[in-house]
Length: 269
Image (cartoon, rainbow, N blue to C red):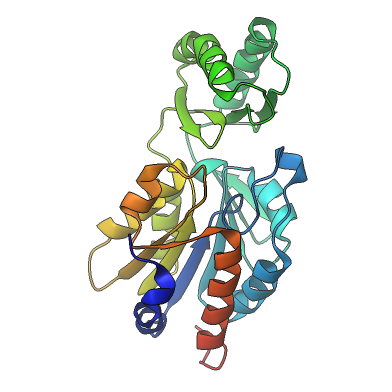
């Protein structure tokens, strides 16, 4: 997949469209992956650029697997929109809204995690109950492969009984409701809500591929650009579905600064 900075004229042409949106994942995209979720920090360089872009573009959104409240806390920009829980939550204007149909799932998630805790005892496992979804991280385990096998062995039956969907990410197992909800559906809703003519999506993991696919399915005259943020742990599907790639958060910092330089002197959307 081509390196974005070798083709930045494509970005310049796209940024001429109005209204325009920018959607970015958080962990692994504007924040380096940390040993645990609590240790992750958004790049100050990325944050400074996003502050400016939120004032000049129609919509700038963080699209995260974290809860919307947690994504909002990490990024800390009031003018942005925050999509949390892989599309199940939206924070905007000081309120968090859940998509319809997930009301019963926080209870199911809690029950599954209670049972999982009794079945699996591995040093390094971190379990996040995020309401309608859950994340089981095994990054801190000494043997990642063995930990993944143990986690999947425990949760496959529990998830089936609770009507939950299992998905994988960077050293994490995700539990989600079996609804047609994803980062991709959330991004499509924002595109329609703000009547965007163009948008850029940045992401580094499997759930970000959903946004890339959704972006590419939008019909003309809308134009979208999917940018994969590549690192050692990035699944191959990210580069496969991306239009261009960047190499890690450092490249994202440089990219966002150049986007600011392109749009800051133009009229606001």
